[in-house]
Structure formats: structure tokens, C-alpha cells
Image (cartoon, rainbow, N blue to C red; front, side, top):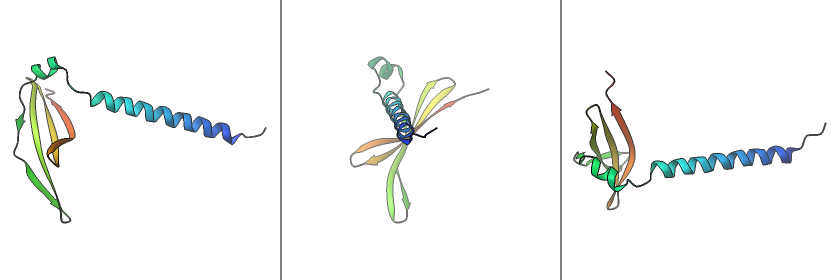
Length: 98
């Protein structure tokens, strides 16, 4: 029985392509803009004052926004300033469990 490394490489490349495509689609879905109804339904966020993080001689301006979703949950957004815009670093949804 002879091994065909070309077939293994093709299968590996196909799996890598599927992984890259699914990752891209998931990221696009998560970062899609909110609809008008979603934007109106959410209350205005509480924005904390911006502050500086300094390490190794470099600084970064960041802030946190808190948005109430309902009586038992809220979202916390961590954002950093890039030029004149605020860019989301990460978002956490907090839910009351008891």
C-alpha cells in the first residue's frame, strides 16, 4: 500500500479553509450593526470617564460602558481610543444567577 501525501495535504488544506471560512462568518455575525429596533430598545449606556494605562513607556486611553439589558443582566464594554474613535476591545454580559 502506497501513501499519497498529496491527498493528505489536500484534506488538510480543505479543513483549514473550512475553519477560516466559519471563523470569518462567525466574526461577521457577531460584529454586525444593530437594527433600528434593537438600538431603540436598549437604554442609554453609562460611560465611565476615560483613563490612561501606561506600561513600558507606552500609553493607551480606555474607558468602560455599562448598559442595563433587563432587571437581571447588563453588558460591560471595554473600549480603547484609536485616533479619534473608540474601538471595542471586548464585551461581557453579566447575568444574575440567584
